[in-house]
Image (cartoon, rainbow, N blue to C red; front, side):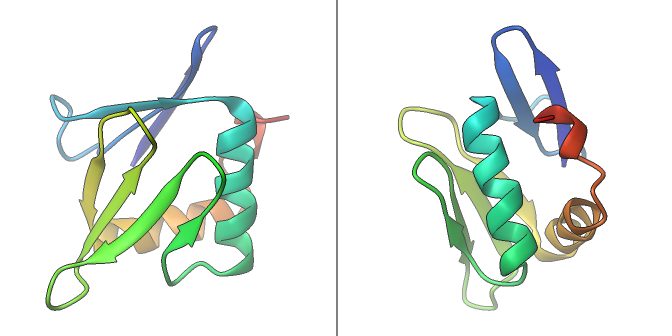
Length: 96
């Protein structure tokens, strides 16, 4: 997962698919996502603005979505790497 900040918000995309969907959200919504992933990193999570869904017959597809925004899709291995980064504080500076 690739995360970037601009004056208009926090942008999240699948780094393995640079031409894919870009989900734009607020710093508050991203902060909520970080908090929920630090609490329960291995299953789906829900914040008021962002939802993570583990899908597929084998639970290998992960979708990050928000109302009215594109859905970012990744695989379980890449998601787990992202979650480890979240738990290590690698993305905290986006919401400091």
